[in-house]
Amino acid sequence: MARLEDPVAIGGVEVPNRLYRAPLLECAGNGPDAVDRLVADLEPAAAAGAGLVCQGATIVRGEGGCAAPNMTRVHDPEFVARLDRLTDRVHDHGARIAIQLEHGGLRSMETWHAGYRAAHGDPTQLAVSEPPWQLRLLDRAGLLSYDPEVMSTEAVYDLAADFGRAAGRAADAGYDLVHLAGANMGIVQQFLSPFYNRRDDEFGGSLRDRVRFLEVVREEVRERTDLPVMTKVPAETAAPPVVRRHLTLEDGVRIAELLDDAGFEALVPVECSTFWDMSIVRGAYPARAWNDEGFREGYADAFGSRARTRAVALLNRLQSLQFDFEPAWNADFCRRVREATDAVVLCEGGIRERPRIDRLLGGDPPATDLVGMGRPFYAEPRLPARILDDGEATVLCENCNNCTVPQATGAPGLCRTPSVVRVRGRLRQEGAYGDGGRESAPGATGQEGASGDGG
Image (cartoon, rainbow, N blue to C red):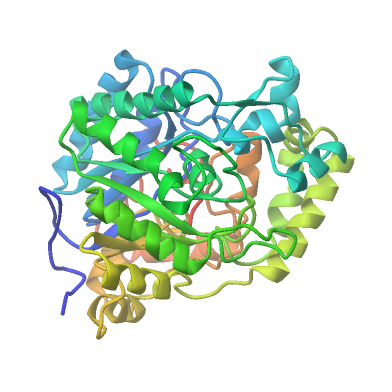
């Protein structure tokens, strides 16, 4: 039976223990301080003992594809080369680092961010197929804006090559693994999902053919580097009743089997929706964030007006009722994938206490090979020090989601809950993070260097 402290191999990379920081949205951009911001966000987890640190979704192209403001792009070789300072800092602590590669497709800012569209002349979105009628209805209602550029077969191969080129640059900068953003309604999920993918070429039709894009991406990565490749594997179990064509849990397991056959070294099974909703960040309605005067103008710019901001907030409130917090909500899916494949399985989403971690790793059968957390790192950037040291430890994160909503304005994701911040301060003074009171790396932005969105 595996223990949290045990090493584990992903392909040819040995990870020193089974605790990882899940991918988060760092909002670091590509400016002159971008590397400093990434170091500030990611190094604390490595310094506190995380075996693997996953850099959040980074965009493989220089134009379009960002799902939120200030996402980092990795199309520029000169910029990516400077990221060796980040990978060196993580390696200095004995940890490994993965880079998550993404393109947002129909989820991109071109669709939902009013200020971005106005500044860029109503840009098009890269699309797998024409948007389904449900999304066109939202377009006609004025809630979203679609002007899709449906990719030709040649364009699909070009996009896959951009993923491969980004992976090659990351390998040169010292990253240990390549992580593909296969869920949260990004372009990879859009290829996999029958809701989005209505293509009639080699990349559409049957589930087997819809997986083809990920297989080609892996081939493109392998042409440029031998780094292990992992991806999220979606099951659209939260799809609303108006969506009849979606990925079932059985589809998700079958996708995992096909990717295992294709040579993916690791898989991250996640239950989600066909839409970008609170199924990926389950928990409470973030009233504090929506009511924060400091973000009002940013929300109005993102959603088009204060009235539309109130409408989005209302939808957010309704979703919070549907997607209440559920501990380890991906555990059963992970267990099924682990039983069906030989790939290393990583589990994240709602994992909050050490005893549950031990059960996930040491059950009969185990649910997973590694355990990750996202939002708890906003509350405690050096969380691994407590989780690894205390067999009864519970995270401070309250799943209130006040860390995530302001990211629509380009703000970093960080804990804004006073009760959590106070307890973290007390624990830091008591030495719970094993750092003599220093919680974040030099140059941290925002509040103690935490940022992003995640499980």
